[in-house]
Length: 379
Ligand code: V47
Ligand code: SF4
Image 1 (cartoon, rainbow, N blue to C red):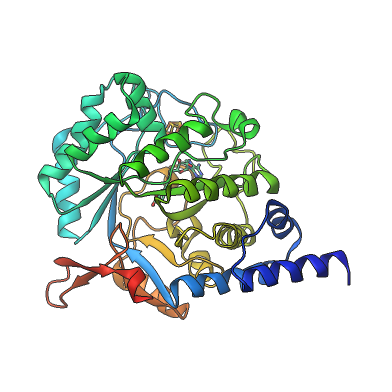
Image 2: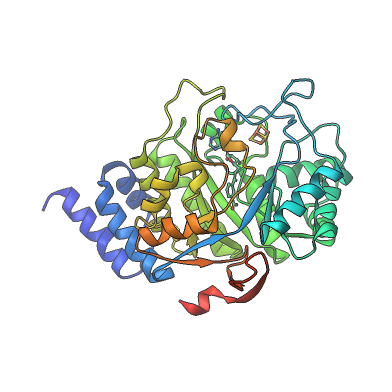
């Protein structure tokens, strides 16, 4: 048997037996294994964990400001304070967004933005408070570790204190952004000044200890290589072993347009599917892998449901980070369109809330909802 055949048979046996893959297995899969083989293996794990279900949610985005003290090289969203594209939401604009969420029957608002150097911690706290007071049922998934670290730096208080204030204001969970690539050398080339990798983990650790569920991302397709991606996944897996609060892993494809790295090509569809599959195979202790359709496009997201992904995010209205960076996907999809995509891919659509509980709606009044039981129990 060739070295390749021996190694792939060993990996297949590990996947079949539910055994953990090593760093070398991951690099081999990423660098040498064809897409259909890695996809088939990832699909085995995906179906073992989530059956035929494909999850989505009804959500809306709010990026309260694009003014940011940092200058991450991959970012096309940020703005200088004095630039023409700079904007900052006031309370009335936030309330309007929440009313829109309510009228659309959204269960979640996803809130991330820039680090506006003229805004104090109370301003960020009020963003959450205003949303919560306007409509308390709406789940607020807000701020990345980069922002939480900034709040801690501004107030000179520990992360736990920052979270306690945010929870009191209405925060429900934390999204997965700001992870980029943990390898220190690559990170220093793409986002030199912002929160480093160990800070990213410290913030998640603090969140998990307080019972706050979080997500995790990886930005791929820029200056990193296979060993950086696998190292990233193993660091996530180790943190999950320790604190157990991650719900979903979301690989994020780099969109170069309007960024300082615009000389690079956007990752191909093959690369997108491979990163979904690799994440599913390496992260044996994560329940969910998300194919974020806004970033991947509907066709790749749909295909990803057979390559390891069990979630395609949501209806997503008002997304800016990817559209500023050249994404040509629609501004949002209706529930009917999401159902169509999922069913065409041979999967069964299940609406979830942010915490993966089933969302139940009456046919006569679809904007009204109530929360059912946790979905894991149904699998
Ligand atoms: O941290 C910024 C990335 C992230 C670009 O938790 C870019 O459910 C590609 O984290 N090309 C924010 N990526 C988005 C994010 C996210 C998205 C969807 C769902 C969830 C969740 C989280 O977007 C940033 C950064 O890694 N990003 N600019 C770009 N040009
Ligand atoms: Fe600022 Fe976030 Fe963009 Fe970095 S990715 S420049 S922290 S808005």
